[in-house]
Length: 443
Image (tube, rainbow, N blue to C red):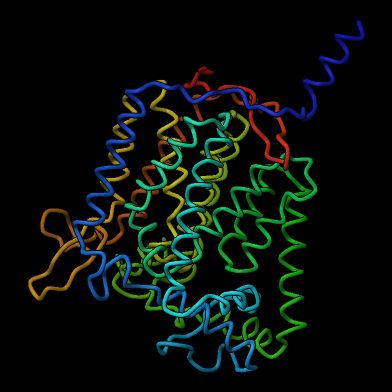
């Protein structure tokens, strides 16, 4: 009887365990296909555009890293952050807290700083892929490490990831913080800290507070909100003048970023501006954004309760990019966990490889050379030779609609109240012990 009681108690609580449920199958066909995709995307990455080509080559960027460093320099020199341009004549658009976080960037040696930052992002990208596999419940072993490394290399061909590397952006750092945070057990006292720090640096991750609220993870939502408040309080104490300027004026000035109709603004608001041909009424954008949020959160809740945590988090990340007033194409790095999820589904149904190919086809770093030798990277910047311009220029927003519809189909197929019992690994990462409706435990 005592044994039955212990089993019943274990089934109703988190269980500390050192291993997850699944082992990645050491099947050469699977590894071979992944290796083929990685090889192909790597060749395309370095042959479609010369990596040393001025203004476009992968290794010839770093302008956003320069802005981060110069923002840190302004802080250290007591110069204003928002009332005058920083390096390259650009305006600093991030939070005052971000400028404090970026101060260690000043320690990076000149001339090689972008390569150091690029190397750190490459390492982080591999960790993100591995973390996605762990969220799916796979045990980290030699095969999974190899697969994670291969997929990380392949992911660089995604235009948002390539652009992140090219500009020296911080998107992968923010996504890693959010994934680490959402993967933690619900009873973890640190759950919410990662989202809070990410939102303190760049506002978009604050959307995940709504994610926690929708899932009724009240503690995580509270911790995230308090952490955001702490980042504001700290920056206000250290940078009172800049904080006042940012939160009373700069925060409300979207024109500091770029024109809302810019092709690289792959958000719902940007799409509306391009479709209408003029700035969209605020009420229309808010109404459509609210509708998108409501539908996506219903899907996310169903996915989470049905034992699909990675897809739930991925849909949330993509939705944050859609409903944000301005989302540069490099904000769409959430295609990376989507790729891992698709690869996971291929292990039980080979037809899912078509989804992998479609994702690379849509979001790949495809280049187009104009007659004046100007080069663009990304299908959304292509001329409307074969596909209508209204489709191409809003490509990521339209892709989101398709992804959300697909996620909704999966959510509807899942049992309604199939919230998985979690195994909590050392460090707080929580893993589902149930197996999703379309994937079986493999060893």
